[in-house]
Image (cartoon, rainbow, N blue to C red):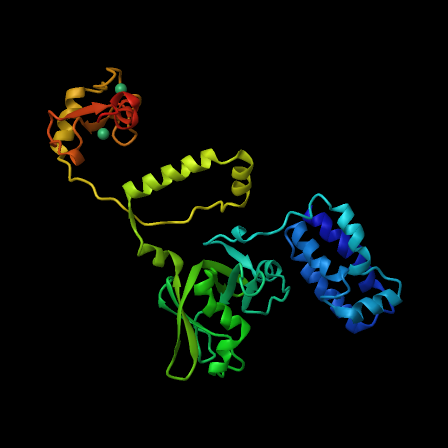
Length: 361
Ligand SMILES: [Zn+2]
Ligand SMILES: [Zn+2]
């Protein structure tokens, strides 16, 4: 559908303009560059947002002059086709890019970023997404080790970044700190604004991760840089145990089940498709392998709970799949001995841990 939408605009506005014998060169060059932008869209809703800028007489992208000149020659303009576009693609105009479409580890084009941020200018390095002062996100395209004398660099590869602030001609003064884009970094801490760091390689922008602002520092040349730390590194400081994690998840599932289906579907629609990562601490007992081997031999492929054959054969070593369970849990002071252990099929094993029949254990 996006191809059809793009063709509708380029076919009615750009191509006739470029083919027109009298339209001035300067205007044609503006037409050409807006055509490049139009062609870069991936969702109809994003394209619609771009076109909307022309509907309210702001004459974005090409400006008033382009509109006036093209109208003079009776050519269609972004402005003149807007209402027709809206009607023709009314079922798709709500399909636009959202923040969660940007996934860590994926590569995006400069257009993807500029179009999402709504500046439509691929030359920018820093994009403020959303409205000041509570931005939805900060996107920064970072070149590592460029030759300006103020190279952005990893303090720690992939996780801690020396990110030079926005300045003109690489001359840094404290005044730069109050510039809108730099202020957004500094305020991100308080506003909880995620900083998306894209590592630039040619026109490709690799989403390295979501970072948090720590502080700004001066280097030996008087340059000012932000120290950014990957957000999940920060999360590491709040590591949790597997038990606490499971308990928390369970209570959240309970809550999710209780909330209305409409609410849940709405949340699912906007949820990130790829889960975030978290460090979970697992501390276990050092179990005696002889106990496991001995109990498995005793069971001889038959579950000691339901006295049925093991449900399947392990692919690793072609032995019957059974799990060795402690009758009195090790965490409750049980012994790691053959007498306190039994070989169970997965159903019986889960039943013993979670089933109503074995609640007292
Ligand atoms: Zn069983
Ligand atoms: Zn068990």
